[in-house]
Image (cartoon, rainbow, N blue to C red; front, side, top):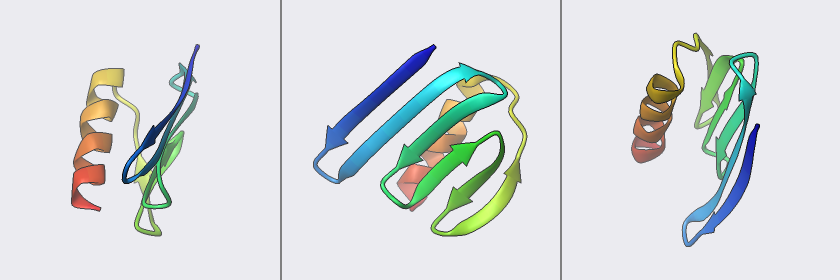
Length: 66
């Protein structure tokens, strides 16, 4: 299990990952990934977990765009 909170100049990054059915990635109030969905700037969309690497790539891309 991984659990981490990082305080950055632009806001807090939270990461919790146990397995593909129990995870949370959150950056400020802008981007949040949970099992089965993601929320970017308040807009919810379905999200299918494929791999940790893909999720990290998708999350980073959404944070840059937010």
